[in-house]
Length: 143
Image (cartoon, rainbow, N blue to C red; front, top):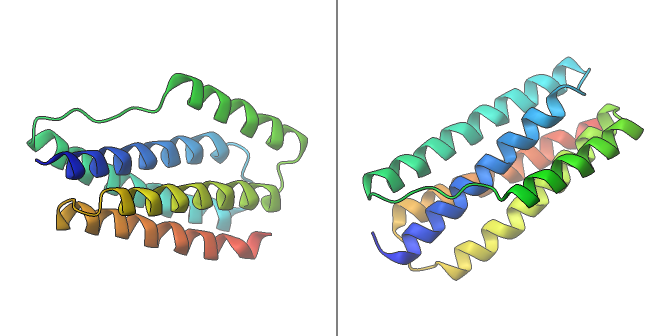
């Protein structure tokens, strides 16, 4: 596996792990059943994408990247603070949209940076990007 493919897959896996962690962190605050269902749907999609990236890396004998401890702790603390002050569906939607926006920016950068990666890894990254865009659009109804 070439370095561009490896790096793109690692970033896809890492981004999905971060999204899954965010869904898990936010889930306890969600009271609206429709929003819960939406989050569960997208959590499942991110898990499927993460599994795909992980499988491709494993087949090549490459370890996945894990979210950094400092990043994870900072994310958890800032999310908890925001939700302790206000945990209504609108605030949760804003946090989800912020996460989608960060994912879209990161993916866009990685797709540009690793433009010579394999077609399969680029396709995975594009699918994740489309999923982020769709989630961002669907969550707007909760603002």
